[in-house]
Image 1 (cartoon, helix red, strand yellow):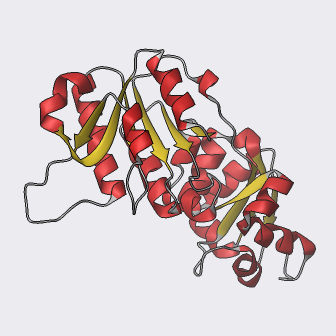
Image 2 (cartoon, helix red, strand yellow):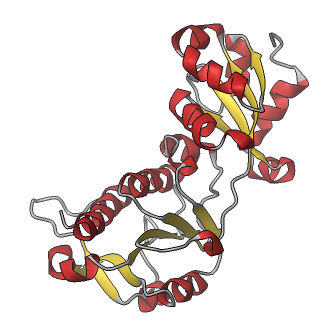
Length: 263
């Protein structure tokens, strides 16, 4: 058991909240029972360390057993040690360390549904879009431009493990991504408030589509919009002025999922 909050191993985990430290070490942190369970279930080969408290082991013995069957080093720690490691104010008793995720466009075979997040800066929004894309059955999520780091602890938490379910691709050049998708017959739909209403493009949604979502505050740039085949909006039937990014993205992705499934 690790009992000293100033132990070098504890400090090393805490430093992973910083992107430069993650990049240097080649690892990142995953907090909470659901995210750690998904990591151990879907990417066990990437797990380096798992730290848990006695209370966590009593409540989630199955996750501890998964950890012990993985290649990871598994350590019980005190509550104070876990607090010292965690990025959250109220950690949930378990933290894992895993090697950085790395995916590329070349991994994608048949593409039916993709979410492209361009210049999305808020990690909570990005993680929620990834979770929605996973739930809608998307083939991938692509982070382009100066979007938030995929391994940001808040993004990882807000995805609730979905980052381990489908490829999340980081690619700086949006134009390059769009060209690659179009060459494979994928229609690019830019989500914006002034576009055609979703119900009017149902026939398009039944085809392979990639949704392009822009920055939370400023939306898509003119250059980004120009890359799309069609600009599409989520209709507002009530009195709300607009939808936030994550909610709008969920609606768009499910509209495509419904159309493609014939439901």
